[in-house]
Every structure is written in C-alpha cells, then in structure tokens.
Length: 82
Image (cartoon, rainbow, N blue to C red; front, side):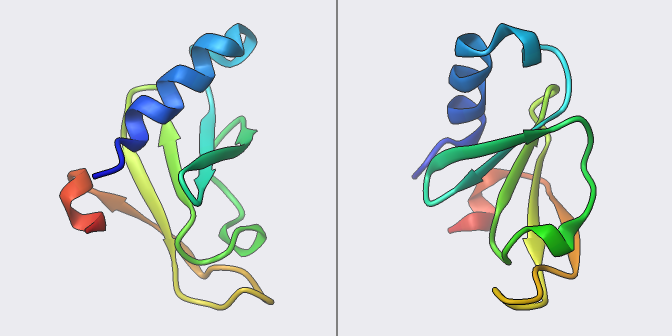
C-alpha cells in the first residue's frame, strides 16, 4: 500500500519553505504540487490526493478529467484508498 503521508512528509523535508503549512498534492504516487490551503477541486482531476501539514488525507471526487473534480472528501485512513 502506498503511504501518501510519507510521500508528503518526504517532499516537505526537501522543501523546508513549505514544511509547516499548506497542502501537498499527489497524483500517481508522486507529488505534483503544493497549495497554501485545500481549495479549488475543479483545478484537480478526480482521484488526486491532498495531504495537509498535520497528515490529514483528502481525495478529490466527482467530476471528470476535463472539468476537474467536484469536491474534496476527508479520508479517515489510507485503507479507504484501496
């Protein structure tokens, strides 16, 4: 199982200016971006993962690849991604 929190933590260690804030965005098991807050699901494709600085996991759902996702959904644990 992919550990998205660990992927985000590793990225934050390599990018200390973003270590304590914002959202790390993950697609296909790789970081593709950072935002100051969780927003604009329509700018992400459905299935994108977002990890905040506290380790909370969110997934973008609904919509389509052209129009983007409809919303962010909180995941209680990574097992929901399997």
